[in-house]
Length: 115
Image (tube, rainbow, N blue to C red):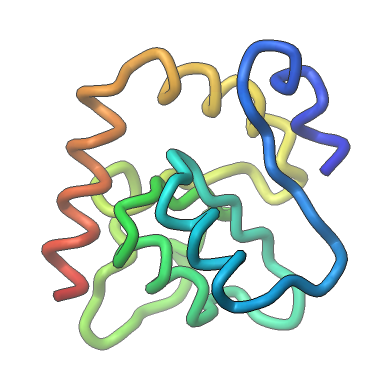
């Protein structure tokens, strides 16, 4: 992902547009600190729940305009909202990678909301 290139010199950035096995995917998810879920076909996907399950901090364009039942997408409480053009991705990634306690607070909130 080109948007994360600046981080790749300091952090391990995994991005793949090729098909990977389920076991490889889940292995990487279990080790991920941040999961970026940009909107594509829809604003809300099962991948969001996978991030919650694995306690990976979910980054996605702000979805404050939609409601879910149960409402588990709470900005800065269960996920980190990004600008729709993702221009704040690098800044927020750096912040949460450097602030482990805050990252884990949100991850744990999301996991609890999910389970």
